Image (cartoon, rainbow, N blue to C red; front, side):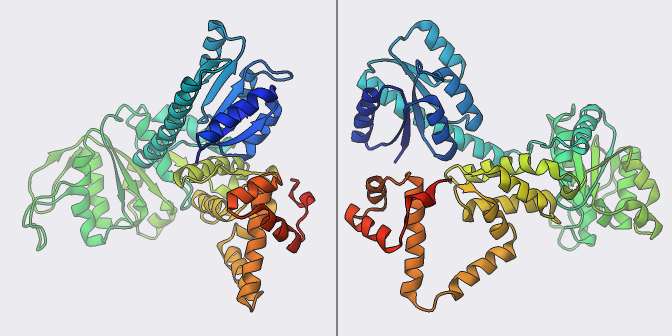
Length: 455
């Protein structure tokens, strides 16, 4: 059931719109002014908004502009008794879905509302699919280190210079390679990735250079290698520090001569490939130990980009966490959640040995287990998977009787529903499908008080 927010200073209009929409099986929330409307948008999940333009203190156009900063996917249908073409054009330019004059035509209002909700669903679905299909994710961060990386990418990407990206696991080395390709003149061709650590030593040459039919026992047909697949584009050699010395020698030849030879073949094949390599190892130390070729190192490291650990750029954690929470909610079709400022500060206090990957896992865990507005207590309780599991274990150990546990869960459930509905008992009873008198009995039984729900 879609939920609609009506923002209008005229109570009679709000009541009329509510009756119409509830008759059509919509859930309805009301706000008597722009500020109240924005507060509801901060904590609620709405399919669409009906907003008056002429209101005291804050007009509808300003509400629309500020609401887009909260969630730019919510369609706004502007309504006004003083409708003019100029007003309608201005509202549309600001991002309104449509403009309807008062008194609204019932059929047009319902059709417009239905179309707006459908458009929002398609927009959100498209964003999710696009993010899943494309690997070119956004690079985020305001720290000097990240800004320097972005600047380097802008300068280096249009060239064919080889780049060596270093950094710990999970810092975003792959993302740097993706953006180097995306901003290069080769972006019309493929970016081909090879995880050198994931391929057995005896298969790495076949993976990179391909093989001819019959080259070895399991070579039942010809195979095109990654160098050929990336011809004209970019080859990303991830974890190159784990590549065998034999394969390193062949990669060196390919870089020097622009030619490869398939395993089991004797024909040179010309390839035009830009190589971007990445490693979490110190290759200079690997050279001293005899595990990596110095000449290959110098071929690969024309440009060096080091990606710092998340612990070295903790000021970027709030902006990353905000991005992840939006993605997780959209991907899982969850109601939109938000971090309280203190919760973001608490996230900055943690150590992230898994870097960006670990932070995203933490955010996903908080979205699933935390409250609608994620608090410091949520972060302390759920940020660590061990602490989350321990908390769960402690809950189970607190109860020996099933009835006691059921009452504990019931109290939490009713508590959250009352809080969500602003202590509207009638609305809460309807939502959880019990009689109002029954809900009052539960409130008395669990000694719930309205003051407990004030944020």
